[in-house]
Amino acid sequence: MTINLYQFFGTPSWVQDIQTQLGLILANQGKIMAAIDDLKAAIASLVTEAVTDLESVIAKIGTTPPDDSAALQALTQQANDATAKLKSDMAALTAPAPAPAPAPAPTTP
Image 1 (cartoon, helix red, strand yellow):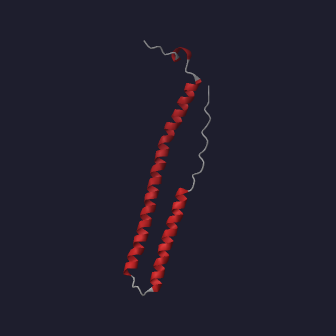
Image 2 (cartoon, rainbow, N blue to C red; image 1 turned 60 degrees about the vertical axis):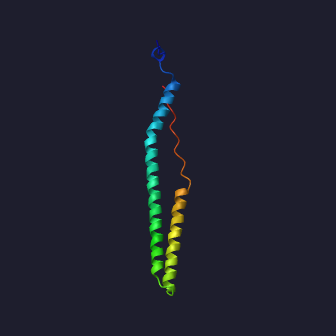
Image 3 (cartoon, helix red, strand yellow; image 1 turned 90 degrees about the horizontal axis):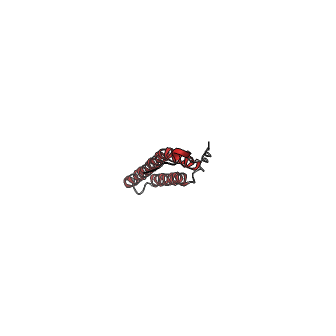
């Protein structure tokens, strides 16, 4: 036979606090998972764009006559610009995230 003491004495405040905190964790889990999915999509887009830009420059280099120094300089600049943009975008992605807002203090009845 099992006796539930909470039935007679009420639920202790620490149990209510744990239930509240667990509820907050579960509520925020969906937001966190969505943010992770958004981050994955942003990184995939960044990589795809960088690869496309560099493949385009490589293709143009292959069709540019070796004696056309102006065209080769322009392609070199395009490659440098694409590389700089990729580095800038990666730096933005790896920058420290802002500190999260503090969790609200649990209320006790």
